[in-house]
Amino acid sequence: MDIRSTDTSLLTWTGDTLALGLPEGAVEIAGELAELNDKLGGTLGELISETEFEGKLGSSAATRLGGGGPIRKLILVGLGKTADFDLQTLRLAAAAIARLAKQQKSQALAISLPVVGDQSATAGAITEGLLLANHQDTRFKSTKEEKGAKLETVELLGLGEQASAIAKAEQICSGVILARELVNAPANTVTPLTMAETAEQIASEYGLSLKILEQEECESLGMGAFLGVAKASDIPPKFLHLIYKPQGTPKRKLAIVGKSLTFDSGGLNIKGAGSGIETMKMDMGGGAATLGAAKAIAQLRPEVEVHFICPATENMISGRAMHPGDILTASNGKTIEVNNTDAEGRLTLADGLVFAEKLEVDAIVDLATLTGACVVALGDDIAGLWSSDESLAAQLQEAAKLAGEKFWPMPLEEKYFEGLKSPIADMKNTGPRPGGSITAALFLKQFINNTPWLHLDIAGPVWSDKENGVNNSGATGFPVRTLVNWVMANN
Ligand code: BES
Ligand code: MN
Ligand code: ZN
Image 1 (tube, protein in one colour):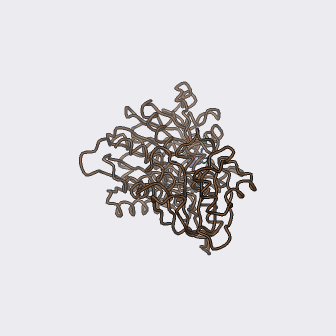
Image 2: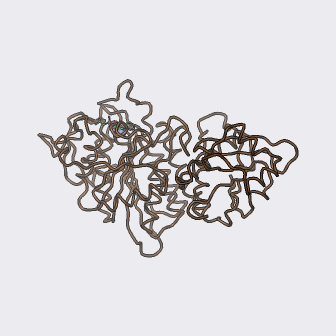
Image 3: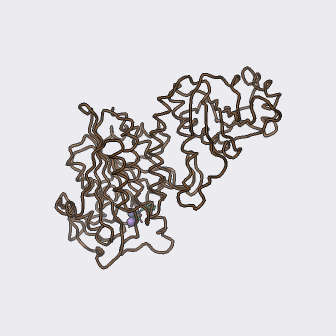
């Protein structure tokens, strides 16, 4: 899809399909709209009245314009209330337009949407909505034809020259799409080895450095928690450490640590019927978003040093599997009684966090499909956010707001750590069912000393069973855009 912005106005554009956004309320055909309506022989007014189009957010209408006129198809999308307009309004409108244009078999499209903020932010948000809604993962179909027509060219009307904002949005979306493709791919395709290969590709394409810690090196660093999980798998674990360094002195040093379980069977506490075991290819969603963010940041080149860390393995069963009740020692010396092998993500992250803190970064963000309990609490669209540092939490929420991704602050309620007390080791890896996402966060906190740290439980939003906003069904690429905005805000 070739996206360009132009000063051409709604009235002078000619071509295949014109898409317009209209705010909520009785549409008044006056001014520019009246001129357009005249130019289209009254079809705009007819379409609005016949479909009772009221501009409600998410609503749309489309028609074919007969004769050899200047425009062949017209698409209307509702923008909702003017007072509520934000960048997400633009993304949602652009996503709706992309889907309708495909259905209408449009190849050349022009879009007229209001400016929110400034012209470059507007062009960026529209580009994101178009690219994310347009992406369909057909890699695993024997016939690769996508539904509808392929959108070839899109012109953003009345926005002037926005080539750099569009290019930036394209770079960010390339990271989101990488994350989606990693999560969509099943566990017989994406393994710790392919995660490592993906990191290698990013490193070589954009000049990042990559250190892959093999099992022996993890052993010598004392990563007993990560390796305890990895033990049963026939595929060797790969602890990935990808580093983006800017040219000059970095303004800040940040670390992102993503849970990278390419499959979670539960281990010997195996996931039973109805547990969703067949969806557990998504359990590397945190690592996928970490690599997606790396791909985007490597292209955006901020003056910030960023460490991307993915302790990649599978949680499997075999004669070598860790037993329920085993005691593991993490790389900070703390001992863990594994009372449930299905609480494996926190074990891998424990060593990931200790490793990140040794890098002496200014802040650490971890992201993980960590608990079903977080999905019960916040549903499919909202991730949980825990932090030991208020200003880091505020930074992340600001980045999320810009991205149109949702996080809800959750408590690091120290008293609940009592649920993780072990009679024999420093802690258990699992507490009681109530507050399960909170005890998971408190467990992670044991592996951080002083560095400002923030934990995101993304088990709900990494996946969508149906079309939802800018996402199609399948992996969403959540929260790559928030991570990128957060890093760029430190620039
Ligand atoms: N990977 C799962 C969490 C998960 C659930 C991710 C649903 C995506 C969708 C995690 O490793 C897990 O199994 N958690 C257990 C923890 C329990 C044993 C304390 C859970 O949530 O049931
Ligand atoms: Mn598990
Ligand atoms: Zn898991």
